[in-house]
Amino acid sequence: MQDSGETSGTYNGMSSDNIKGLVLALSSSFFIGASFIVKKKGLKKAGTTGLRAGSGGYSYLYEPLWWTGMITMIVGEIANFAAYAFAPAILVTPLGAVSIIISASLAHIILREKLHMFGILGCILCVVGSITIVLHAPQERQIESVAEVWNLATEPGFIAYAVLVLVLVFILIVHYVPQYGQSHVMVYIGICSLVGSLSVMGVKALGIALKLTFSGMNQLAYPQTWVFAIFVASCILTQMNYLNKALDTFNTALVSPIYYVMFTSFTILASVIMFKDWAGQNGSQIVTEMCGFITILGGTFLLHKTKDMAADSSSLSFPRTPKHSNIDAFDVESAPLVNQELARIS
Image (cartoon, rainbow, N blue to C red; front, side, top):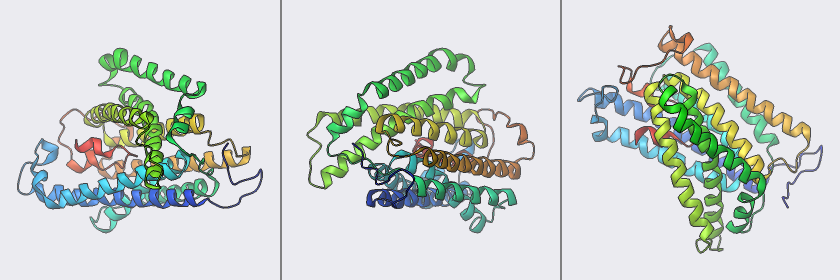
């Protein structure tokens, strides 16, 4: 059973694993947020000597500054991957919003991009919501082998959730994508978010397996480890495909916040079902965590809304951006999406 480290109505502090996960998640957000600034400078520099990325050019692939940003983002993704091995998804996933704060702040300082007053308010809301979740997040479940994770993944509750997700994704791909994919943003984002919730569970399982292996308990001999690895690879490829379609078809200012909300919500739901994150918490703690999450959502939407206002005053209605429209290259890559940014440069 889970050793929550908490009793009803009391708070005994964060466990060492939660602290490690928190540090890794915040480090990930810093690296990912900073990477967009470095990549944008690389894109601008490359655009002065060749065809811009927004116009279909690939001159940025020869720009060292862009690759520096890319490497920085990969480091952030690795840190994010490791964070799931130490802390519950309800703590790690919402903290992805911190990368938005880092990106917006550095853009204001380094790139001299104006940060609207409401954008500053959005940053504050994200910080407040993040602190609320950190202080009330459940402790990480103590797991001794990947076989134990497999047992959790094959319990009736999570099997039912996984089957429901796969059925919904199948219906969206077969029926709704051909008819509504190019006109309704929720189709592509729905596929990415649903599959993403399963991929995070697989990522967490792999992270736990690697953590135990490095601590001296080899988990690579378990066939379940490789099943999780194949499952994660399949999910990520699906996410990359449909996230690219969403970003190529619709305005990033529309895609990014909606994707963040849906992906984070489904991931938290999947984690609660599979790892029973709320089993050791009382109602007030759970409600407080949800309030923190809603606060982050408000800050995220406010940040993207003010960014969109600054870029295009006509975007109040969130118009659909036509395919191959002449938009700035960084607009396509500038939204820090949790665990999915590698998709945009594939």
